[in-house]
Length: 311
Image (cartoon, rainbow, N blue to C red; front, top):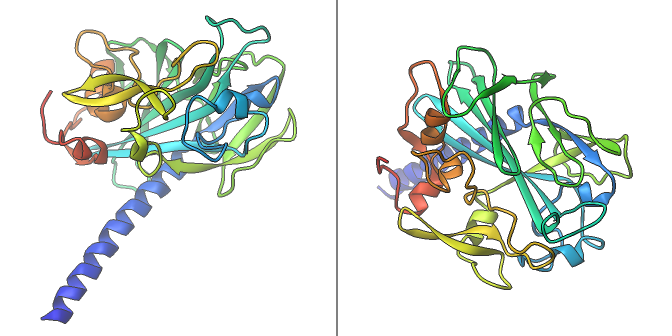
């Protein structure tokens, strides 16, 4: 009997490890190629804990001495019909050549999200991409079977080697799915197993993926001055931090992945874009059927005790 129980436990563990590995492989397969405008090393993407701690309001001052190896945060959420792949780019500084509180701020996290339809093959079919640039979310599609909803369509997803391509502004780091003029120089980031540090402009380097769930999400309750997050808000009755704690220049201006307030319209709430992406995308665009909002894997809503709620 003990052997049977042990076998069941091991097989269950193997199942869940395999599931998680598949999600990471999926995130790696679709991870974007990033054309990033660069005027200085303040434009290099890195980890939130690049300075060895999980404190938000010392990142501006620690930027010159911290580890600027390239990392991109990711998350995978799964419904019956789709995967929602979220990628976040972090910079310790959002800056300009001349800083004012209205222009610059400590910490910066801009993000994109992909919608991948389960079509029977291992990686699925990319259907849509949304990118965040400051106060706006932009919608791009793989083909015109996806129609506009609350958001206007910006065009088709650009690809290189099968991956989506994004363009990131110098200084302010807004992300676009269409070509933009990048001020000063450019660094091209490609997904890899190791996060590299650019030595200057004109380089191609690799970035490593970091799971949001195992890192930022585990610190979600650290809210307040001197902690990682600030600007508490309620998401369906649960308190979360809307922004990274930041004191230099503009205070608490960089949103957490679950704190974005853009493109809410009349049906969405702050946090839905990350935490309930099926609801958000069903509002932002019109997808071919079937488009299920029933989650098979959403550890964030599960942790908050909200999985299964209909909103």
